[in-house]
View 1 (cartoon, helix red, strand yellow):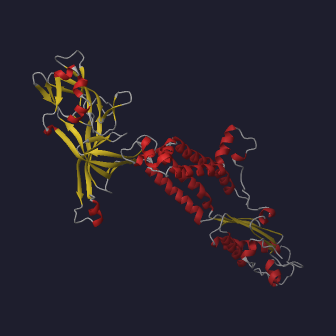
View 2 (cartoon, one colour; view 1 turned 120 degrees about the vertical axis):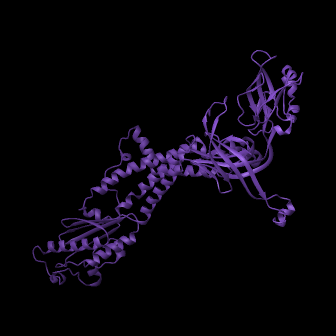
View 3 (tube, helix red, strand yellow; view 1 turned 45 degrees about the vertical axis):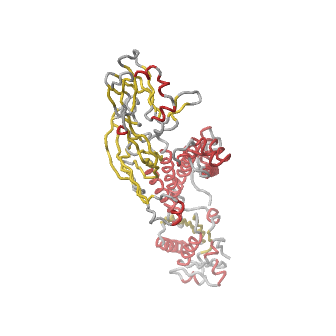
Length: 553
């Protein structure tokens, strides 16, 4: 059916630049292309695992090492972080823009067309419909009584006037009276079928399920909210899905948040040899039965962004994290993902000594994560100038850290006090003896290394972590918007799938009936309802013939 209503903005004859942009995004063809490109990009993003699904992985070398040349090309093209890339977000933004403009371009003309419908349609409009019927209501002299009379030889019977059924000419005014009666009977039948009926003289418009026409636009609204929710994930602090290792006994900051999490105690229970199958026993594999992290969550209340100061932490939550039983606090969730048995240094308690006299000036607690910016030991002040969890040298020979794990920790202090130069002298300290020898700590420190020494007197001053618990940290503040958008979109889909807007127009001119009907789908149901309405008012016609015109023979 031709779309009746006001013209859309995208149909302007002489569009301006703004109109051309509007036309571009209002085009369904363009929208299909954008969606197809987005689907293709999404498919490519799933060829290999994304970067954020790995633990302790350097993507620049991982893809080439694991997947060869194709993996290297995958990383170089940026497909290893497809769903967080600017171009993928741009595609989502373009889909949202297309949905908004497509909806606005069509919904306003549709509203005007449906709210101000013309009851008496032109006969040519009616007979151009897919479901249509034309025939005489009265069997006048020399005329047939419609398609059925021509096919079966029986005349149409109308109430109150047997003379009409006998083929006699109607008395003056009888045709108008009969048309009104027929229209009244048709309207009554259609109302029983839940149609809203409007009449004007001898014209009628019946429609039902008009609300289904808004289904696609409600679906669009839901999709727009859904896409906004997805785009909100790019706002800092709104979305996180990271795998972080927490050594036992250590307090570690959760990136991009003001929260710190402590792995207070990690517990793992293994299957005994008797409980394992022969396959595992032969391979000598160790299989965990259950493992948990006793976690404490802290919130930073002061000095959170000052790297020179120790943050002030407040305990806000405690939880025992099992597999499928996460820590959950105000939208932040920590899932138990994995663990690794690898001893890591948590803290040491070094003592500052005079190498010449052997005098001890005191000791202090030095953690491997979040060390303080300065320590006072006797008459000496130690200011932290640099910390390298895994000490190494870059290509230029400058100190750098190979990772954030304290595998070979190194501290650079500026020590000031008696017997030292004004302003202090730099001192490089390795807590582990093997690192001291590997990197030649005494040679690097030079003169100050001959005067002072930082060392751990006994193993009592050393704290190790036996296990590192890997937790999946998730934050998704946009998820409620995504669920709401999905629910609204589903409502729109249901409205469009399970109901169909049906309209029946008819007019009677000089005893001749012209009928047209339209729906967006389920023509079978519309044909049957139209044929039932005609049969109820005395016109027997096969439902199938209506779709072919249903004209009088």
